[in-house]
Image (cartoon, rainbow over all chains, first blue to last red; front, side):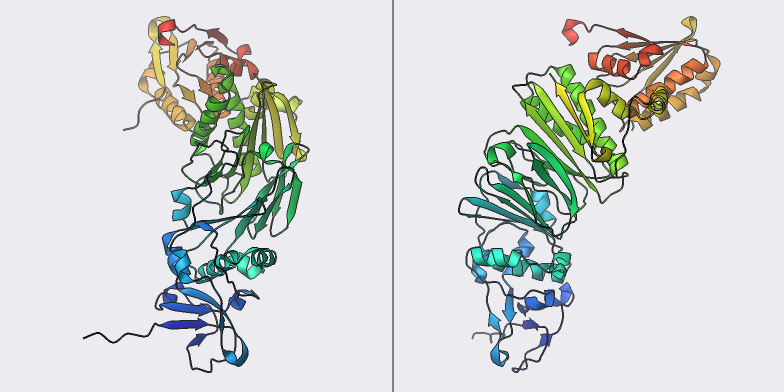
Length: 402
Length: 120
């Protein structure tokens, strides 16, 4: 004898009006634990200020935690239509069973995914697009936003462009995203923060620039070729415990964060975006720099490498202490480029602070140094070459010849 | 059990205090180094045995950062307060360069030791 089949428990989350079928309809987003009582959830993205519903059959999600995939299979986006019959458009639930493989070179670490991180990648007309974000497991709005986003991103070019370009603040509040676009060589690289209060890298005239924090501002960098860039930089998603290593080597797999190798070969530089308050982690960071130097600066003797390492360490500690006041919630950037032909390494460290025009040769600076204070800049000034400040001292740059 | 990083040895016959530093004198271990030096200086031995010569042994040290230097400066100031002669032994050329860069050479005698080839 077969057991009577229980009808699926369906929950509708709507904006207004009543359901003519008497179906249960909540006019808001309840607690996540309430959602777990239902086998299927229909929700109107309008609740998050979204006008459209997502639909598509080509998932672009390449990395996400398992529990997030489970939500993709039980939540669908709906829109009220005539006669109060909902339009339901979504990617079929079964497409989320097998995610497409990540492109070669893209590594989303286990730690990143375990913390709720996800990455979408797709290619259109030879251009690569990457969207990444971080889900909050205990936040219903974050999960619903994620479901909508995945359906939109599965929906083809038009949907992606149209919808990503006008995400409402309410959405960004619950699911902040980073977006990066790489075109053909000599095409501009675009990087947009959709709700992430984070710094962005910019390159101009062959230099790396820190463009300050921005939210939702569509910023276009100067032209950067793939060969120049070497790799995409995917900053971390929230100020959290570990710095994200952003390097170019194909064999480098950091314990945390995301690394993207475009060329599949070691690039000329290292870019790292660090969360502030690094005092306890600086040795670990230094190990990373040392490995990078050992791999790429073979021409440099051990003493020189040690001196370069010291300068980088001092610059980074300086950015953390003075630019970020050693408190959590800030970020600073370190970029290191090797110009092999010139036997020169250029290091640039930018912090979000106001900066200060420090003169290492001033009387006060000399007195401080005699007392053993403020030695970091003095060391860099004495050991490295061409030390200079930009942005009123919030960016420090120096060269190191070998 | 926490291992000791700093070795402080008093040599009463030559009135010398020898401080041997660890391989790294950096921001992440300088607090421990300070605590160990304070422990030694407040010990009965340090109070009984006078010294007028300070030997800083950086033979094993190959990396010193600004906070580590700050600690070295404090030791130098302590020795200067006692009118002691200060000699620093270094093997790493980069450490020597760092000391010269912050003008420590004006306040102590910095001597470069060559490491025997078999220990290099």
